[in-house]
Image (cartoon, rainbow, N blue to C red):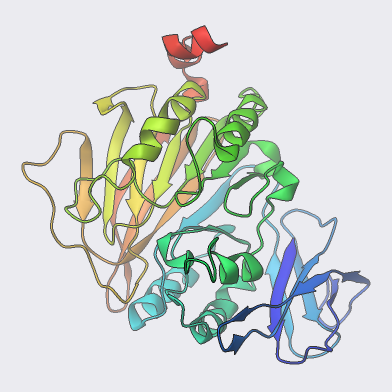
Length: 379
């Protein structure tokens, strides 16, 4: 586990003490730190410390920098079942607080966020306030995130590459997964039975790009007998019947969809559109029983509000769509079955508005026995 925190004290040590009993720390880890400036803003000292090895399904108590409050987190299990919370386009509004309260009302193992975190949009103190807002949640369970358009913060000539705050603050395990960029990476869960790939919608993705080559290599390493579930997260959806952000994921879809289809990816989660929508299994704009299920879940609570307008008549590929704030839960029961549910935010309760059982494509002899012709030619 990597622990990240920010201190105003630039002399504070980058250390984490931890153990399996409150107040009793029998291990200590030292890590790295960074800071950044953005015009007249100077960040605090940003600490990143990797701790472990850790036991699965275990609660650890920890303290950062040798003083201050004690936190605790629970490591994910190494076997099924395992439950993921999925929330996109979170922001920091009263809607956000409602979503996080609903998330916390029921236990889960890992938090997945497909882009658009703080909505700082160049106002760097909003990165700090976002950290304070999510700390009670993000200190208790692993948060695995990738970037959205609101993380770019690019200014030509001055900050030409963008993502300065995001890369400094939200360091993900890209090096551990062989990636050259914090904007795309992968990791395993449930003892290697689930492989999750976080793709970058706002970095190069064409067939000559580093991301494309990395994705191809990452997919090639997967043994579906050992890893029955493969899940992808990205920000700009490839399929979308909302009138908002129409076509913004199309160039990435054309570049990468065949790779995901050939690898029999089970589910693709996206954000960006501030609403919820679930599609059937798709490949190349047609229903395909061997393609991924596509889910848009950009309804975490951002300040821009909901995307209320949908295209009509509704596409037969779209199974359910609604413009409401909420969150999703993916409960992986075993090697063959997952339960997906979308929970609409109500004033007091989190209401299940959409749910579906899905079978792993790795269990389909039909899907695992064939590949697209162009992939066969390439291989």
